[in-house]
Image (cartoon, rainbow, N blue to C red; front, side):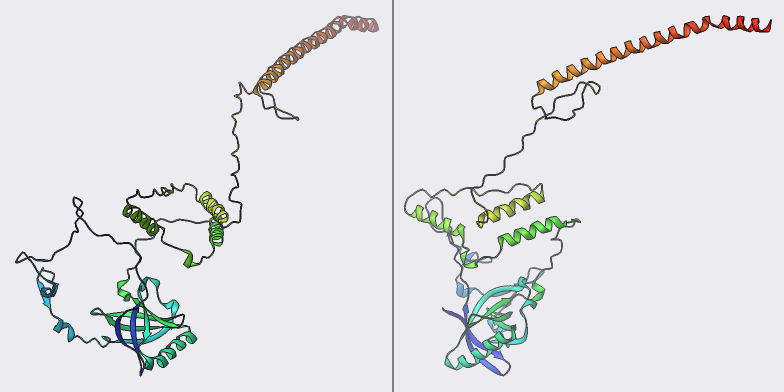
Length: 352
């Protein structure tokens, strides 16, 4: 790997010659801008605004634009006199636990390679000290004309350095979180935990850029004069109306994807909803006692008619019985009225 910076690690009075190597590389496919009419490359040319003519890179310098629009020219000689002790040195300033570093500060990643045989001993010493302490080193270094912050840690048997943003370069998350009061109940949290447990962990080496692979197929097909393959349209998630239902479906899908449930399991059939027959009136609807439910609506109507007729017949019989009872009572009370004079006669005879 080609080094992009040569210098030394300053570890107290210990100096370790090192070479800075990029630890990452971009695999993304880049495109060129072309003229659609003839396919010619479109290039940018640099023009001076005052003279309106194209200039070369050797004629281009640095300038700072002031608030009023004035351009203040800054030369390389001006920058060379800046107090930048870390121009060729990665100066370790502290050792802290790794969890003290906010991942938001993480920037570019580099490997620090030992610069020759004399650097092997101090390099190994620093590496083993970092391993045993379970800490990371915080350092300052200069790269591409500015001082930067870095974090040194051990990766396998090498020392890696992550460029860090300065604390004042990280924005506070103000106005990002929802400003409404939302309550999450215990059942929803339990389902979320179940989903997390079901998804579990994954080997990051198994992940790959599917978009880049599909793009490579399109480029290869076009280069061969063939039609590019058609990819299935990505599913678009709809609006979540029921969070609990969405969590339950997510847990079920995750289990199936991990083979915990058969993938060909058919979903349970939906329950059939039937509308009950309309009732004519409250008085004519009989209450069901014991027995089996009737699924057909015709027998229910017939039974209701029969019950209504029986109720009418019983009412008529009750009316007739009441009339007969009144008649009988009237007959019994009639002779009592006739015997009243007889009592008077008896009373007169006893007085005489």
